[in-house]
Length: 347
Ligand code: SF4
Image 1 (tube, rainbow, N blue to C red):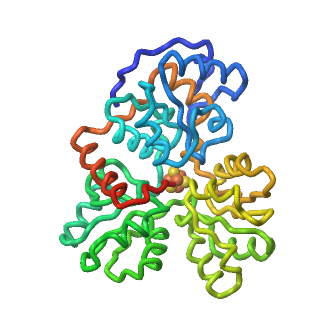
Image 2: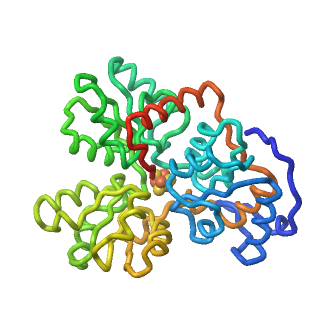
Image 3: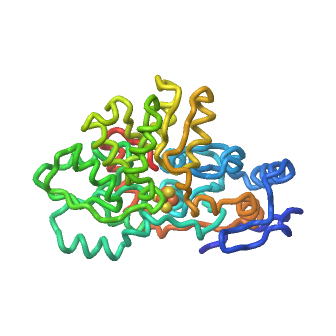
């Protein structure tokens, strides 16, 4: 990894220690918050936090949001340094859209099981087996995979993206099998091959668990992320009349926040990573938001600790770089998505 920034001193840096779960040793105290703000100002840095980060990181960030929304903010900001509190592919996307800026991730070990489930090598082989097919990739992919992709998609525009492609062209859709199944169902597209990847956190939110929670909370609305293992079950339950269809809302994280203010129900069961509850509860404090599975926590996202954020700002690391030719090809697949219309919001 490159290192283009000069380290800055900080009185708290001595307390930062490494551990298997990430950088540790600092609590999110007022002293920590003041030092983070001082370092960010000195670096002319903007702090972006994904909706799945711990509340303390979300609260100190300049902006919170979904992966693509944050990358767009990164491209528009005047800040020279972007500190992306999220996982690695998200910081890569910020770099792809802002190649002239320095992008830091507080812990470069923060990966993603979904992005890892389709490598560039695997996609190359898959394309070779289906040379006439068009490749549609969810934004939870590495820059190398995006560079081999015809059009990217997000959970909120995946249906529109696939529907926009010529009906006679085969489609290779990856890496998320649950989102792929949702798109196939919505578009009724037969000539679509779906990669069998998944996010271990979302896959762990199961259909039976959703059914049990929905039955125990008959008045609650259901907010379901289409990456969830329970996504198919939710539509099945609605289709069978077990859950009223109007209670089931398939939403990206950004759409969940938009919907929170206008939901007609006093309680909502949320099927996605538990970090999302912090922003939902802030957006609509009068509504009782509860997780479908309170163990659905992404250990990668939680590697962005108070200690990791302070260390990144002070030492100017871990820097995320994407080679120019990869970034150009990856950017083209993102721009094709945006040209289709609804730019959507990612995870
Ligand atoms: S919740 Fe799943 S898809 Fe999201 S960053 Fe974590 S492992 Fe990846």
